[in-house]
Image (cartoon, rainbow, N blue to C red):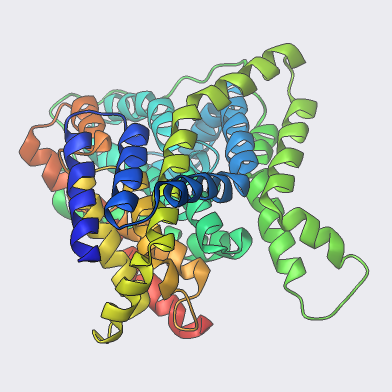
Length: 430
C-alpha cells in the first residue's frame, strides 16, 4: 500500500510539473501530502520536512554558493572565452571536435550547464561558419561535455546534493567521476556525431579564424582559475588517502574539503584578476542569485527525501529489491531513469530517487558510486518535458525528430555508459 501511495505522489508531482508549477512548490507539496497519506502525524511530517531541508542544505549550501561565485567570476572575467580560443588555436580545424569537447569539459567544471551552454554556443556557431562544418557536428561535443560534468562532477548542484544525502566523500566522487567522464564524453561527443551526422553544411566555408578579444586575461590566469578548485580537491583527497601518517596530512585533509577548496579558489581569483574588487563582488552576488531557485529545489527535494526515509519507504524498496538479485547500483539507476523520463528535470529525478535508494548503500554499493549511478540515471532519455531538450532544439533550429535523434540519443548514451562505468568501477573498489 505504501508503494502505491508513493506512486500516486510521483504521479501528482508529474502532473504539477506538467502544469508548469514551480518544481520547488511541487516537491514540497507532494512531500507533505505523501507523508500525511502514509499515516505520519502532521507534527512528524513537518519535522521531517525541516530535518530534510536542514540536513540537505547544511552540508552543501556553502559549496553551492562558492561554486556559483567561482563560475560567475570566470564567466565575467573572460577566462572561459580565453580557454576556448587557446584550445581552438592549438587543435586546429582537423581536430576541432576534440578542441570543443575539451573546452566543454574545462568550462563545464566551474560553470553550471545553462551558463556554460550560453557562453559556448556563440563560439560553436562561429567555428561552424568559419569551417563549413555542421553546427551539430561542432555543437554535440560541447553539449556532451557539459552534460557529463553536470551529471557526474562536483561542484554541480546534482552531484553535490547527492553526495551530501548519501554521506559520500566529494573528493572520491570527483575522482571516480573524472574517470568516467572522459571516456564517456569521447564516445558520446566525438564518435557518436561522426557516425550519425553529416560532417559538412551547405554554407560555404570561410577561412578558419576566430577573432580573440585583446582584453581577455592571460592563458595562465584563465586555466588556473578554472581548474584550481578541482586541483585542490584532487590533491587533498589523494594526499589524505595515503595510509602512512605524516606531519602534513592535516593540510591535505583541509584542502580536500570542497568548501575550503572553493573558498581558496575564490580568494585566489580575486587576487589575480585585473578588475576592481567591487565589480568582482557584484559578480559573486549575481552568481548566487542565479542558483537561488536551484538551492530551493534542492531543499524541497531534501524534504521529500526525508519523508520517504522517515515513513519507511526506503526500507520497503530495499526489502522488495532483495529478492530481485539486482545490483543496488543498477536498481538505483533504473529508479532514477524512470523518474527522469517521467518528470523531466534531472535534478528533481535524482533528489526524488535519493530517499528511495539511500538504504541500498552498503558493501556492494559504495556511497560515491551510488552518487554516480543516480547521476547517470538522471540523464536518461531527455525528451519534451525537459528544458534542456527545448534549449538544444531552439538554439540549433532542429525539428522534433532531429532533436530526438541527436540530443536525446546523446543523453541516453551518456546515461547507459555511465551505468556501465559505475558497475565496472564497483568491481575494483569493493
